[in-house]
Length: 111
Length: 111
Image 1 (cartoon, rainbow over the protein chains, first blue to last red):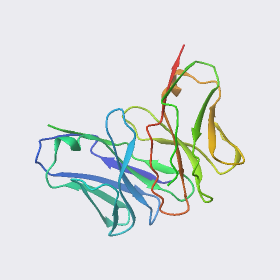
Image 2: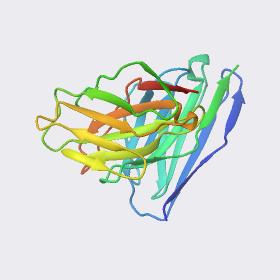
Image 3: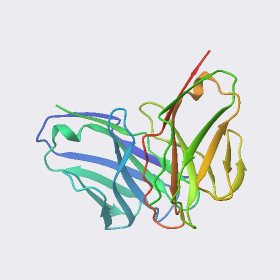
Image 4: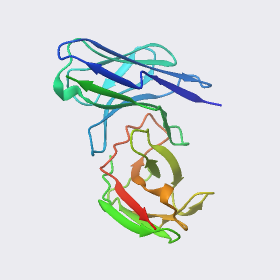
């Protein structure tokens, strides 16, 4: 069965520090991968999506970047975090007719 | 991408049937309708997906009229554990679609 792993679960980082969130998928090949962010009490905002290794599409210009170094690995990064980067970050895969499967999320607090 | 409109919140008593309607006037021919459930600090969970008429699974039913400009998620006999945010999404699941989540409907179930 397909599973998605996302870590860490929570993270507190100072302003100006770098960020690296990792997401991996098991049990499938060449998945479409997505990074979403959810601010408190808000809906999910699509940040990046990828249809293959090295292929990244950005939906919202911002302080973040994404990379896909391997087929089942998707990384969200920042060189210098801002306070506005705080939120709940979710990785997801899917889009082939069976819906999307989300990871457990990372709660990022920038202080 | 087809935009969706849902009620911001709904209240229900335990044991009742809950119907949440979503409007998607600009749905495209290839678009499917998918509903997700999200609990606090968790990723959304796929509930049900449909294209037309009626779809039923072990947790919900999805009703889609002939013009497909709206859809209704029906939750039979809700319990306290059904308290969550429910999202309606419309998109072409056959491609690397970029599903956009709205603010969803916050369902509160009480005794």
